[in-house]
Image (cartoon, rainbow, N blue to C red; front, side, top):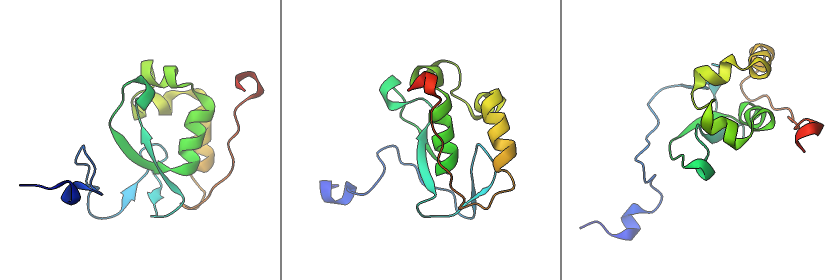
Amino acid sequence: MVSKRALRGTDPLGYVPPPGPLFCPLCGRPLEPGPSVDEHHLVPRSQGGKVKMLIHRICHRKIHATLSERDLARGFNTWAALQAHPDIATFVHWVANKPSAFYDNSRRPASRR
């Protein structure tokens, strides 16, 4: 019998990161464990999403600064669709030569505040 204590600290979806180096699915740069890494839901939790993946914090902030949760759920719920968005494609090209722990603030445009 499994007790609640044995289940604490485990992911309910059973996500176990693969062994070896991890890479950001958006920009392709290596992920270094620490404050520069976030978890991202491809479909936002508010829209019913459950699956989450590790991604650079700067990439995560850019996604949410560019697209609303509704847009993410409807048309940008795959990495290929996100990379095809013009603003995000420009960002990925820009961040490609930055170190993996690089971070810069991404602000929402004034029209979306």
